[in-house]
Length: 110
Ligand code: FES
Image (tube, rainbow, N blue to C red):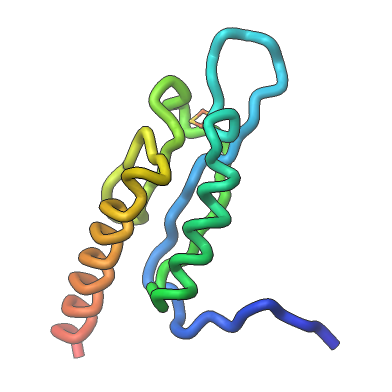
């Protein structure tokens, strides 16, 4: 029998992809994980659960925007670059707005 940490409150309406690539070589190119994206991923997952935001976070490989990362792509939405704890609240608000728009679209189809 499995023991789970959480049960998502709603089925996700869309995915968020956050680059958590860590570059192990010694070239000059930075990586999102080197700028804290793995810690951001944990924080975003916690916020999604706490606020019952029906979106799923996927830890993704490199998105080829390494110089301006960490990068967060909202499915059918924006690509946010330079995501930090400082601008995360603003991004979460934008994600909530997308949830509202998508729910309204789904309601109009019924
Ligand atoms: S390492 Fe994140 S976009 Fe390349």
